[in-house]
Image: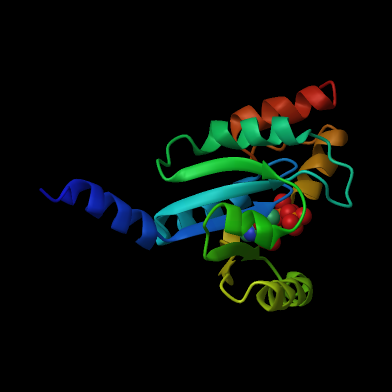
Length: 174
Ligand code: ADP
């Protein structure tokens, strides 16, 4: 007898639309969370990829960033969080993703993002980059802004989730 359940599960796995949303997320902001929420609706599965080794020295370790993001995306059943090192397209392939999601805030993001997406497309033509424009409420927001404001004792409650705020303030002994 044919195991239709098994065949269906296999077919489903092969047609699942999986995307990777890579970044430093140091720390994850409400702007990132908006992109996560919106792209989780566009794909069957979204994997948030926390870059371990970037040129920037992070405030939070990769493990801390992964756990922090897990804490704020728990309501989205199809979102996973992992860390990665090395080439983004290799990570995307490992995740069986066919798309990379990036957020665009202003024209200043555009030039770098265009170059990266074109380079990635040459290396891996089977993986496309999808850009989501920022929610206007968060167009100004970046992880650097959050750290800068927190370092000088400013209020970051409009920029990050409460649990993230707590961890940022702890880093600055506030
Ligand atoms: P990276 O170092 O890779 O730029 P970031 O954590 O700064 O990592 O950003 C990850 C992704 O999220 C990038 O695509 C970035 O453009 C996007 N992003 C960052 N902040 C916002 C925001 N406020 N609104 C929309 N997208 C954002």
